[in-house]
Amino acid sequence: MELDTLIAALDGLLEIDGIPDYCPNGLQVEGRHEVARVITAVSASRALFVRAAQEEADLIVVHHGILWNGPEAQRITGSYRERVRLLIENRISLAAYHLPLDRHMELGNAARLARRLGLEELEPFGEHRGVSVGVCGVFPEPVPAEELFDAVEEACDREPQVFPGDRELVRSVGIVTGAAQREYHQAVASGLDAYITGEATEWVLHQAAEDGVHYVAAGHHATERFGVEALARWIGARFGLEASFVDLPNPV
Image (cartoon, rainbow, N blue to C red; front, top):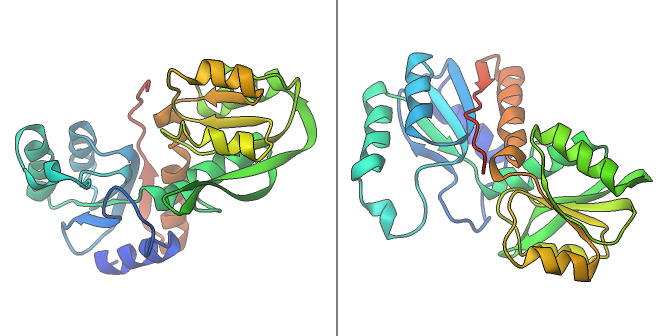
């Protein structure tokens, strides 16, 4: 199918218009105009672009692209130049969806993780720059805190960093994937029992102990695989294209 048609469908699906972000969402690098094979991944990298060329992909769709707001985006030098070269020489297109893929209530990172954990009654959660970027939900019945931590480990395929609060049972959980440490305060203000994100920072240890809300850091990469995995399945089912998720593991 034509690249423009596929990108327009993704832009509309993820509702990119009007969402303030740190990067341009949608098509970032234009390659060949016909798309037959798509790969998705969490983050753009030279290793990913080499893999895409080897697999003869026409389009790469990622969560973290190569264009970000700021002066560094204007300089095509060093390792950044090499990334651009690989795309241009192999005529591979690159599209990126950052906050739109975090916040989407069906295919988004937070929503997919929430459903994987068994949360129900999902609602938008985690206001950032005027829009919600995550979800919150409840378990049908409260679960022991340790059971939640184990479920996060299984879902994210890595042992999370847990900064315990004081809730022995957990019913309500807020999720904002990636680096969303400060949204923890919104979980506290909303009266949630636990908060899940990707990363932790120094103040979290004492804050969780004092506020009583469990803070679970399950990995930036690990919590943001869900959206691009879902996008690969959506593209394949919707358009009949060959679409697959490529995982290049990252311990962060």
